[in-house]
Image (cartoon, rainbow, N blue to C red):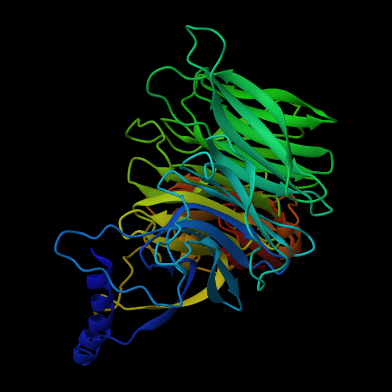
Length: 539
């Protein structure tokens, strides 16, 4: 659908609903845990997205803006005179639930012959917000000797304009990423290809990291690793970067040897640790929070994976999402992102099977469980960030609409659900759902429970031993029931008093609960605790 036609459709829908209001049941308020929204839709915007959170948890997204290529016989909507001139490196910032839009660098249209910013469909961005509140954005450019390479621009805060861009490196580079240390000093990592002295060699891929000198205009470049260029058709090299008190970490892929590695800064040198091998990996993500395991995510031709270790030198544990039905090498933009908060891991990835952005979560060392992400079809460039209290911001590029999108998860959001018909739902005989025996304590997860919660949020049982029956009616989505002394115990990662394992519906499972004294207890789903929770009263 062209952008011009879509804008008309948005106007007509409310009119159609109003005309039929006498026949449509009244909308009902419901809870949802994932709410997609369009952040920017003017022209072709959202490629190469990266995301960072400020100290208040507000998301800030850097991305590439290109002039839209119109469909045949379609006139694209006029671009407002106040909007940044494209091509450009753009930024969208949220405050109080409202997005503002600006640019990091835009095409200069002040003269008769505009000076375009030389970014294209292969350009990507990286963004970092320092503790002081300053912003650093990096990106890769194409063109001639004066324009190609890795560039960076800095802004002192979220409302100030970005300063003039400076070139970090003149080499033709890909996958630039940026991180800042505790003092706000940036470091930029990127990949480039160089020729070798051997006449028969095709060249080497070099992973470099650059840091600015005191002037901020010149950068010192240090080699992190180098490996032979992959022969033939291979996945592209992907990078991710994070700062820790011990130094910087850089995750990267080597398509030639089919390995995923992590480079650890050790003084003035780098130590490389191999994480996984024999995988056509791409789209690397990295999370390294103080006091938490190091997480590296990546997309293979069969699944998305999260590798975790207590530190870079420790042994790595790899968790996988359910396998894709179609084995496809990860393409440009079809990456992963990983983050963590409150002892929970969050993984975003593009599933080549259905072309949508998927989200998975796992509490502690549990296996990854799917989170429903409606509205993410045709998604690329997933970028993920999560606040300390577990509110997830997931940005991506809608490759069909050519829009920048954002979805929020684990936040109590209100939406209006329009019933398909006025006919009330009548539960089948044999209990509220018919799935559990009458003499058991029953908890039901309906379709869409990850967003709407359990159907039963208040249950009671007699003191002593009893059986809890969990009826998971949510097809293909894993849920469970875990009982805790109270919510504080659950939120802190404490031991459950009783629980079953996560399993996908539709399925019914029962487990024994023994020795609970009279009182009030808290229960939740380990995969979706912010939305799926309830109270168990033992009498």
